Length: 163
Image (cartoon, rainbow, N blue to C red):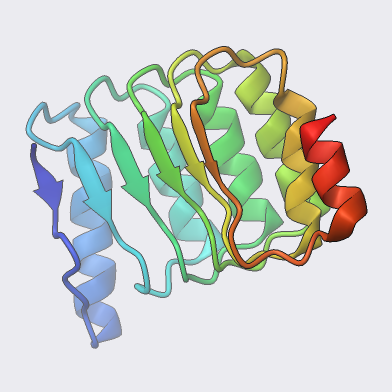
């Protein structure tokens, strides 16, 4: 499986931005060797995720995207959610440890109702609003695993997930 750089961290902003631009171009070019992207802890912004999302919408090969522990907010998740309604190749999405509120989770849940491929979704350590992902249950037949660790959802949230 092709990976864009696995667990490689760039300390310099210029190098990191150049690497993200290269990644976006490879996604746009529909590079069949690019199947796994791990850019966790890269300080990815909403703007960068929006550009990644635009390229992802028409990409046929990317299977795994890890954007955990970045600077992503609802704006970035909304862009990504729109791309997910079109993308059919992505199987795993790791979004945890970002600044996502219920608004972003709602957008993601709505896109998952129309997504025909995502099997694993990680929303770890984003807060009790993670329970809002339950809105897609029943309509998404593909989601097999949902990672919600370190979210203080309480008994009410757990009941909503299981409901």
